[in-house]
Length: 204
Image 1 (cartoon, rainbow, N blue to C red):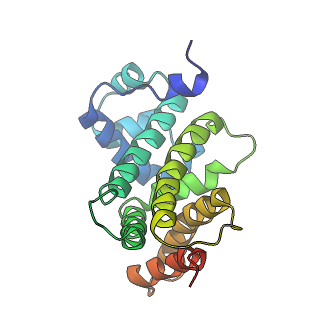
Image 2 (image 1 turned 180 degrees about the horizontal axis):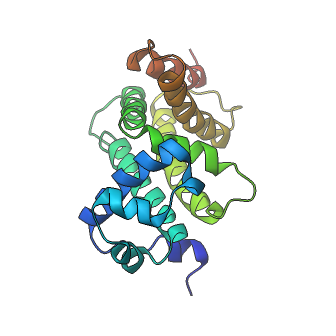
């Protein structure tokens, strides 16, 4: 038996169609928000028929859920690209992961805005979807923290769950803040600020 979140996260039929819809949707949603965009507009911007959208996704709600899944899959692939390299310093690996997150925010700013604006909205029709995707991203960050703790002495009084959340939230907020209010701040400055959280976890 599949729950609502699992149903919404079923794989799209083609990655090419999904990527086109993702790119078009993110641009439109970035301008007007998810509620202000219609399936007709998304289909037209992506260069596909409205029927194709409904055939692949079933409804606008399912389309948005699939686009959230697609964006998180892109982000996860980037975060994991540096994870687990033999002999890698886990703090350096964490720094690279955070840099990948900053690059993702630069490449898909509208996705980051959608995530931040909808994730904590109550109620949200994508709450179950967000819960699934959020747990996946936190698991990636959590694994990186475990790798650090296996090599470095760390402050065991710090809740690892809270630390995961702090780094996760900082990536989105710092990335969006740089784009919206402080474009003069560099990527490396943003990464260093978030890494300060992680470095504070390591006992000197």
